[in-house]
Image (cartoon, rainbow, N blue to C red; front, side, top):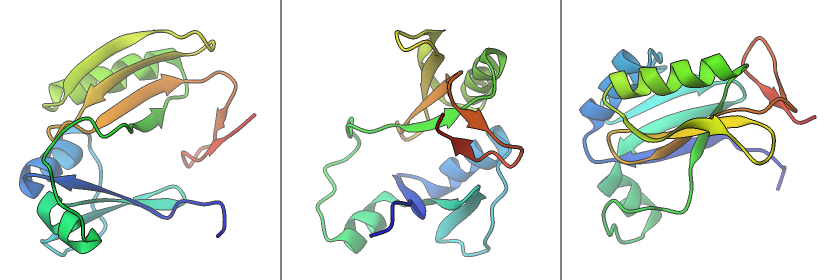
Length: 140
């Protein structure tokens, strides 16, 4: 298997609500017209929103409901001010500020928000990584 990630799909309780959060609240642009799933083009990959029960059925697993999944998505910012701005934007869009941004032990600056379905997003500035004009991130 190649070392790459092609698609991240979040299972959501209410697809219309999730789309409003990401599209109207965060300003993301949808890349498809199918009403049953929403795809968003990212640098080098695709992000998707799909009904949580449909995702569980497709994977052949039970759906125990929303709970901490032991994972978080991350948005790396170009500077500390962008971290604060993105956290504020997510909160204004209906997300929940889980952890305000602060200095980290590893030399960066980060905080967390949860989308309306409770999916965690870390928003961080890592001064040791670079982000190109298209938004692709590179390890030092």
